[in-house]
Image 1 (tube, one colour):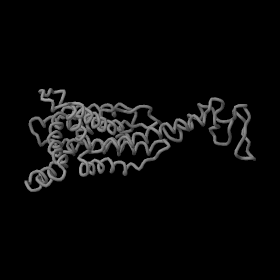
Image 2 (tube, rainbow, N blue to C red):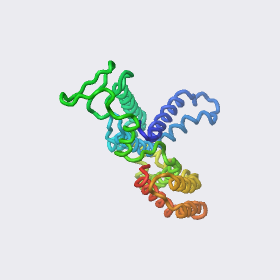
Image 3 (cartoon, rainbow, N blue to C red):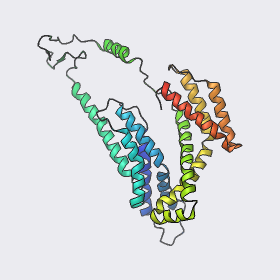
Image 4 (cartoon, rainbow, N blue to C red):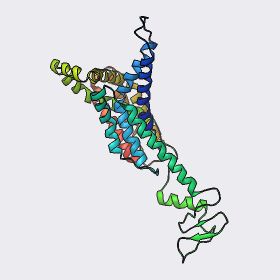
Amino acid sequence: MVDSDWWVGVALPPLLEIAGWIGIELVDLESGASPTAFDFLPVVFVVVSMLLIPVFAVSLYFDARAVARSAESWSPNYRLWGLAGIAVPIAGFAVADLPLLLFVGSAYLLRRWRSTDAAVDVASDVYDGDGWYDSDGDGWCDSDGDSWSDSDTNPVECGTGPTDDEHSENVDNEAGPVRSERVSRWYYGVALTVATYAVILVSAPIVLTLIGVQENAAFLYETVPAFAALLPFVLVLALILGVVLIPMFSLSLYLDALAVGESDVEWEPNRTLWAVVGVVHLLNVLLPMIWILSVPAGGYYLWRRHDRVGRP
């Protein structure tokens, strides 16, 4: 089983994209009737799916990495999938004025699902309901209770392998303690805020360079109009999202540090320090540029968390 929720970020943008384009085809805006707010909903879906392209690429990278590091039968090249998550939408905009998220997302998720299904089939082959595979690797017990071995000199009697409890102890001794559940999911709020401000830092100079100069803007609107129209929306909505996420960042940072400190992991973050960082970030309401201090601190927290806890 793959311990990853990143697949949601892979699935959501293509679903919004296809739902939006289907809605646009169904809504008749040329009938002469006054459009309602519901008529513009498909357009909102399409725009949101385009804005989620960075989330799509990042989710594709991290989910593919989680699959590659799991015990599944498929080991995807997560760097290649992450690159495809950003390269294919750009190429789609240049060629067809569409991000083509559906093709990349569906291809990856279908392959991911097939690998999980294959792993289940392999497990069912190991145990078919009649007998267990000998866990010490020396032999099998068949459905008649007879024993056989790959080695002619070391036959293994049926039932002489370690018991389930002994096998569990061996696994624990070899792999160390295994946590059955995540420590906390509050770090999602911190990661979303850091990603939002990363989008702002990347898109702002691009918009100023391409759209801020009249000659560049005219050339861009003539060659790739969809991409030219998307860039300003990305920057504006990222700025709005950054403001909306101010309390979420502070609350998530404190609660995640609290949950990690109360768990059985070896790292205990300084709750007071990260609470102060959260309070400093709240001051963005009065001092808009204070995020230059608080957001990098949140990125450092995520890095430390990943290093000591294993997630994100």
